[in-house]
Each structure stands twice: as C-alpha cells, then as structure tokens.
Length: 304
Image (cartoon, rainbow, N blue to C red; front, top):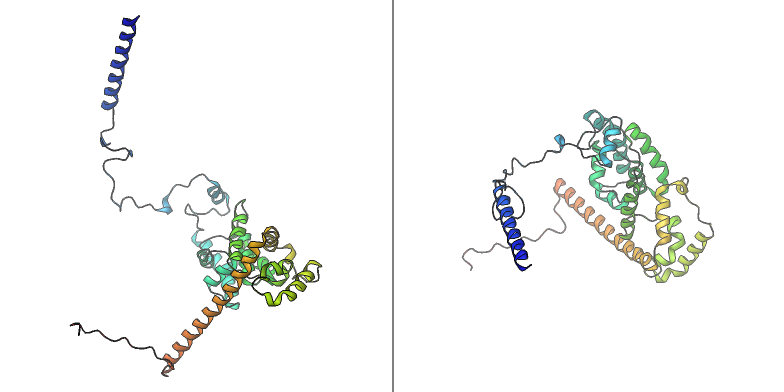
C-alpha cells in the first residue's frame, strides 16, 4: 500500500510539472514575464488612443434605445442633427433666453434657483440637446414660482416635437437636485408653499417674528393662503411639498439658516456687481474714481 501511494504521488508531481511547462510555452509573446495587469508590452501613443464620440458604436442601454427610437433619431453622441439644432435654438432656446433676460437672471443664477446645471441650460439655449418636460418644469419654477405651470406649458409648446418623453429616472433626478438646492437655501420658497412649516423653518433664525410665523402657519394649515393658478397641478410644486412634509425638524431649521445666508450672499454679489458697473462707467466717461486703488510699491532688485 505504501509503494502504491508513493507511485501515485510521483505521477501527480510529473503531471503538474508537464502542465506548467505547457502553460509557459503557450503564453502570448506580447505579454511581459513580470506583468500581472494583463496589458500588452507595447501601448499606442496618446494621439492614437484618442476616443472620438461621434464615430463610436452606441451601447445598448436605456438612453441608446431612447435615441434610436426617437423621431427623428439622434446622433450616436446624443446630440440632435444640425437642422434640428437650429430649430431648437430658434424656438424653445430663444424663448428661454428671453424669459431669463426678463427676470434678470444669468446662467449661474438660474442654476441656483432651479437645480438644473448651467451646462444643460446653455446647451438647450444653443439647441445642442432635446428637453424633457421635467427639465422645463424646474426651469419654469426657477424663473417664477408663482407662474410655474404657465411657463412650463409655454416652454413645452415651444419645444414641439423635440420634446423627449419622461424616463423612470429623469423626474427623480431633477427632484433630487431641486431639493439639494432648497437645502442650500438657493431655490426660492414662496410663502404659500412653505406656510405650513414656517415656524419650523424660520423660528430659530427669526425669534423676534415667532408670533407672525405662528399666525402664518395657522392660516396655511386652515387653507386661508391662496395658491397661484395651476400650482396645485404642478409636479414640481407637489414634489417640493412632499419633501417638506417628510423633512425632519433639523432639516427644516437648516433650510431657514441656509436661506438667510443665501440672501446675504446674494445681496453682497449685487453690491459688488453694482460697484464694478459704476467703476466701468466712470472709466468710460473719463471721470476719476472716488476711491482709487492704491499702487503697489516696486521693490528694489538690489534689496535696498
């Protein structure tokens, strides 16, 4: 029995050695001996490894299916064709730019008030992307919360056939970004929306107005505050009301503190902007400034 077991062990050792030898002989010559990352020994230069999105094969994902099934279809990089780009820029892009100019909002300010990235706003105004109803709805809320449903319908009608249907993730994503803007104190909160939680939001930062806030909260709870026309049917307003209802007292107090800090920062930005415009106008008219900037003293190169 001992001899038989010893013979089996010897045969197993010989088989393992033969397998290792065959494995080393069949290795790819392009693989280095000490490489463990399975990368080829020679790599293409950076200029050859450049990836062009316009000629890329589309991945069979949800976004690609939307692009392929849309009418007219989008390019592989997700942008509309040139003719449709001009149409989007001429219709919904031009109308959005006009509304932004009427309310005196820049791209950055509209981004703060709506929760939509300014790159998306800029691409929409230039016709480089198709809009969704949720995107236009949050832009309408950032422009004017009291006319959110009216502006939303106006922008959707201007978009026409370029409007993309909602997906299962687009509405949640826009609502999540909007609530982050509310927590940061940058999105406008009208009194008719925040009335039921007025005391919890502003009670800690405005202790001298607690009686007025309590009265406003009681009036909102009893339905005495009138909502604007179409606000109760707006998905954006209903999403914010749902978030306010499920927020904790700590989050509501955080909104109040962030809102006051944002108001102070906005006033400071307007003051600096007005000061820059005033200095520019004085320079153009040739009038010397009331507060000239102090000149820097030149240092002697010799150190004396």
